[in-house]
Structures are given as structure tokens and as C-alpha cells.
Image (cartoon, rainbow, N blue to C red; front, side):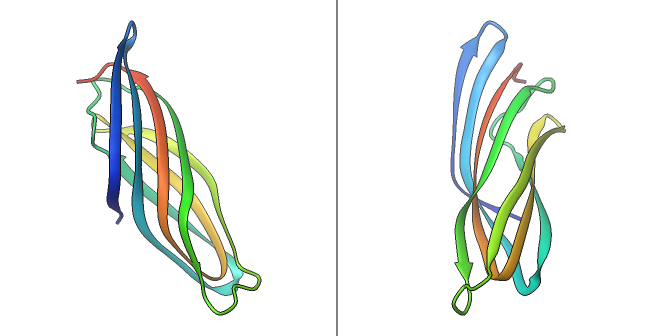
Length: 119
């Protein structure tokens, strides 16, 4: 479960339908306390814009807020990959996260460019 914060979208008509930019922040809770890498998947729907058919999408997800415990020695974090899917008329973002050490991943930011026909 994620919570959205600071969401924006910009829609520009083009000959192929619409060019849409979506940005925002999601609040997540991915924690690690051990010396081995732990992996998490976070998925969320971008319901700002409904699409008539699957758009072409260029997604990017980045870490925004990270907290380390103790002195943060041997701590690490990563967004291994981000992907998009078309689910029930909306773009769904899915990202694979990895953390090691005493670490909390608190916020992610996303930037999505999509081209397609809006519903």
C-alpha cells in the first residue's frame, strides 16, 4: 500500500492523441535490518488519467527519502528497475527496490511520459 503526495499531470494534444507527463511522490515503507540485501516490489496505479487503450510509456522511479539507523555503516539502497503496465484503463508503475543494513526507504518519486488515446 502506498500513499500519494504532490501529484501533477500535464496533458498536451498531439496528432497521435495526447502527450501526458505525470509526476509525484509516493510514501512507502521498505525496511531492512540485516547484512543481506532485501528486495521489495512496490506497485501503484496512476489514476490521474484514464486511457482508452494502452499508451506508450517511459517510466522512471527514484528514491526520494532514505533513513539509516545507527551510523549507517554498510547500508545500501537501490531502485533495481521500474516498469509500467496497463491495468483497467490506467498506467500502473511497478518498481523493484533493494535495501541492506539498517535502512528505511520512505519516499519514492516518479516521472512518467506517456503517449496515447485518453478515454
